[in-house]
Length: 452
Image (cartoon, rainbow, N blue to C red):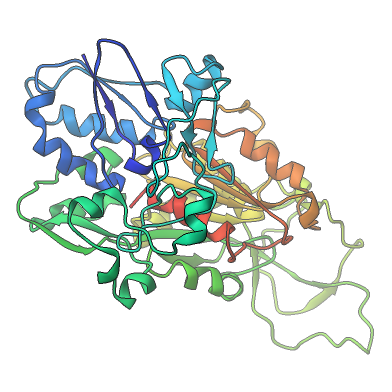
């Protein structure tokens, strides 16, 4: 039997399985997309063995195990740790055979067991250290590195162990190395490895890859479909998220669409001092209340029947079938998409789509969802805690953030429905928005890199 760690090098440096009499392979990869090349180069070690793979939550192992099996005879016996390290540590609070800490892609950075022994060491002085919260990175490749507090005070430039093996000194770093946010990775001259990965299953994009001469080029950007909130539209949502999109311009392309349910123009307590605009962009919704009038709405304004209710989103539970049919058309005409990002009511819709990920395969194919200020609606009540097996990022304001539209407990609840092993949570103190400043944007980038 062979134990294969499918994680990145910086993850393995603070925690790994230590199993007596079992050969363990650490590919020492900089990023997950380097793994197929390592598998190709080490096929002789893997052939004919029972291969047990593990990663943080199991998602990466699913893709990698499919790639190994695609090699045919001698590679049939590939297994993976269900739920990954995350679930294993829940079952064995003392850590069991897992030593050190489990690196996670959220604000916690790492999660330890009852065993407090430190596995990691400082890159510079070799002292015991396993804290990545300072976010120190290699000046060449931008990979996370472990730098203890005392060494961080004396040095500002670091070279990771992989770059050191390649003979890259600190003083050779150019200004472009510091400025570029774009991640580089080895790719083959056979570009089939990069053809529309989102249009296929995660594993099939690996299976098609044939690694020949390796060159370096920017990886393909993720394509993310964006679902706006209630009484918004694609144009307004694009404007509100322009700063967010700019921060991620080298990683993702965002596609904005209007929801299918058109809403009437209404106003609250209109007076002559607050004139109603003659022209206004149409507003839309993904979910509507039971008394919604589905007829074509004209451009006339009407007074709201009741004062604004901050909890109105709890009554907007109808219209899902029309919205899901509409999304099927969008994916067919404008896809493929790697992920779905939803804001407020758009996040509620994205959560419902994520819950039906398996059932929608072939019509709505995606790899992850991002729920910003999300909440659960009645349609998702059938799902229990941790039962939705869909990679997810949950971004919402904490109690101090005082999100006046969506209570943070509602966002926490919908996050709890997704499996912990493939779920990341980013809580901020900025209210009903998508944060763009550090450390929040860094955590968002870390999540997205898992799919690049």
